[in-house]
Length: 289
Image (cartoon, rainbow, N blue to C red; front, side):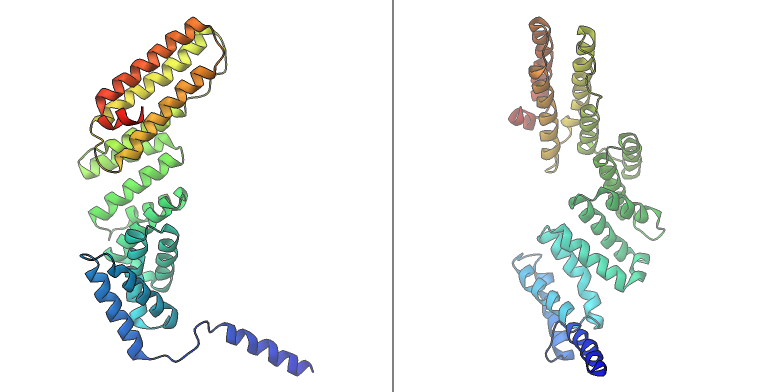
């Protein structure tokens, strides 16, 4: 009886380890890779081809995990998940699996660029710590290209902003602008806006304390506006909206704060003047204020 039980326990897991039963063939593996690759390349002109490429690569990986062509499919599938599907979770899973199967890839320019995609996916998946660590690994590499290091430094800067490490983010942004030999107004606007929002809350209700608090925050927001002049890229819209929402939050805070009506009107006028000034800076600020 014990021998029979042991036999059952040993044979059941063996079946569970084979999630894709059925015949295998080198011909099918080659077909899936070739057809998937053709569709992947054709997707540059016809994005619908990504559907076929994804299906072929996923089937190849599932049915032939040990085939040499499978390793070549991982980076392409990761790019589909990242650029076409905008699915950071699947992007992370695919790249991590690829780097686990081929750790030597991190010593190549292509592998490090893929790791840059991984860093961005971590950031998109709201995992700033992992994004920063991955970006820093690229920056330490002697093999990474200049463009890969610039992208990594940008991801590191944004990760630090999200983590509210503003002093470190400011230094990282300086290094980014120095390396790229250009400005990044959208990132700097986001950094300054979030710094302004992080000004310590009002602790005293004296007139001087109230004036100092709202005046300091409003001046801080206003000092960030020159960056908005040059924030014209598509990704700048979210940052401009961030500034609008942050300043609107300050106005709501003022309205909810019990204080002398004359003092409230005085501060309200100052905040209103800042918003009027903001509307002259960038036309996108007009639409969110």
